[in-house]
Image (cartoon, rainbow, N blue to C red; front, side, top):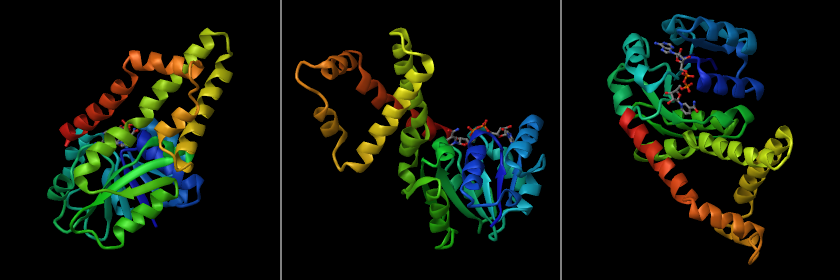
Length: 265
Ligand code: NAD
């Protein structure tokens, strides 16, 4: 199987690295195009994949074509490639907000199109991806993409009307968690912990809490209550989060991110 990326930025690199490091797709079967010369030089050296300035060349070398440019650039790219994406190719857009109808209307009518929302923890084989399928896809197309992205994390089918919600939650979500990691690390440093140790303690805590929430069968509220003693240290910290609107801020961050995704479509 040959996979091509139009737009070789952070998301494309995360997916390419994830697939090659797991041995899912060989680097010689991966093509990527970009406008930025430096990006192409770097990924050619680091990932040993094939690179070109010519987006159309990538299409010719791909069975699966991933459109990984910013939503604002998508129409330019679609116009450039519209006559090339015949039904022999599977086209996967990872762009926030850009709908299947929009993609389909700018490609050949029978083009097989999938809309996917991955996230960068794919790099650590811990991605969370969701996808929906266009009307001209074959029955095996969705399962193929699902299997590929399950090899670097989780991948779930979603009806398209929930894709923006997932974009706010898992597409942008890593940034919200990085913000929390950074803030907690700073608190540790302020109290005298060495930076690298503080960061490692916080990252391991986030990792462990996530794993426990996934594996325990208990709700996050049950897990929180289980470590919150009356009058203890944890309730003292939780009351601070409550007073400063932590839950409301996170809740609204996800909703606003999802709204922005819908606006980009
Ligand atoms: P990025 O800016 O890192 O990468 C985009 C790349 O496209 C850049 O390298 C740019 O030079 C290139 N480009 C611009 N115009 C081009 C053109 N006409 N032809 C070819 N290449 C061109 O952005 P990113 O973070 O990788 O995001 C790419 C897409 O992935 C976006 O649509 C975004 O919504 C989606 N996405 C990103 C994330 C994330 O965490 N970064 C998560 C999920 C989805």
